[in-house]
Length: 387
Ligand SMILES: Cc1cc2nc3c(=O)[nH]c(=O)nc-3n(C[C@H](O)[C@H](O)[C@H](O)COP(=O)(O)OP(=O)(O)OC[C@H]3O[C@@H](n4cnc5c(N)ncnc54)[C@H](O)[C@@H]3O)c2cc1C
Image (tube, rainbow, N blue to C red; front, side, top):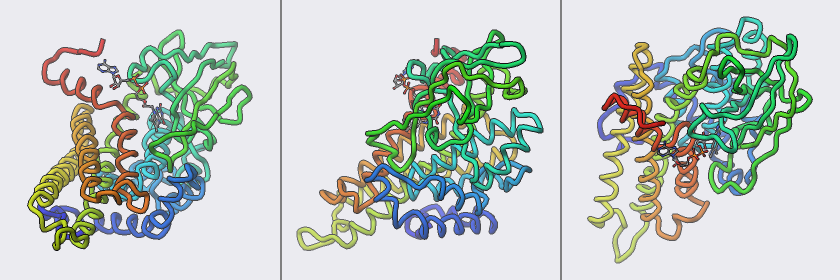
């Protein structure tokens, strides 16, 4: 942490091990991601498989899971890693979140021993890539109405339907697909080379360009009986995976905000107008102070939720509080930082507008802000406003 931004002296509240993990992750990103990410973003191409293997070597994939080659790190350590990853780029953090918190967590939590042994060790090293298919073209915030079907045919399952906006789908080896059966929603492990599965990359994204996103079409995909995740019963299974990933976003989003603010502080202290640094104007200092206050509040919130998670006391609506606040504030910080950089703020030579554009996706995926408001609203009032 750059000292001036650690206004509340949060660093000493971390353990030595947590600080060490954070610093090692930061170094890897400084070496392998930061020098290239602006180009990846501009080109809309990212060497995701190569990155996954490097992240795997460091134990970042499925980092908070235990066994099967996973690192078994604490929730706070995982959060700190997400903060560093997203300080580099939200798309790069998404690669790690989807692999570890969505695909691997689903298998780890709901799979049988054979499924875990088959997939988790190679996913932990980054040799195998996973994706998580819940959203559909016509069903986003309301996954309960999903149209993808899985029907029994003898011992087999046959899946028909489609998933949309699926991170990593075009490069994945396996998809965790959520489908409606006669008994309700169930999860299936679908190897992407199964006949009837096609994945098409979604192009022309103006956000998360350093992340691969795709559509999956399932055309009478025949799977053996043991493709089903046996412990995943009902919609609460995919929702529990989302809670895992949202937790990472609580931390990640403050990473993006921190990078914007660090960049802006450096810029404002060196750029002069009217004979003095931009940082010397009261209006600029008011912006910087307000943003720094929001940043440290977001970091405190993330750390608090992390400590709750490590004490096994974290509830989904608390994760909603964190995701709602931290992404919203990170986006506000990114936009405000952009103003201080003036014309340079719209240039890809600086990371600020890339972060702002990325955060537009982060605001929408893993539950939109409105959905998290409804979750918190339900907790406050006891009334569900969803239906
Ligand atoms: C880059 C990217 C990557 C993604 N990766 C994945 C992935 O890996 N796997 C996956 O399954 N999905 C993924 N998603 C999809 C994402 O989770 C959905 O976009 C999100 O859930 C919102 O769904 P939607 O886009 O269909 O919007 P909609 O559900 O159509 O919502 C549109 C607007 O209406 C609002 N709205 C909806 N319902 C209500 C309500 N009841 N009350 C008030 N407002 C409401 C929403 O908040 C939003 O503002 C990804 C999305 C993006 C952009």
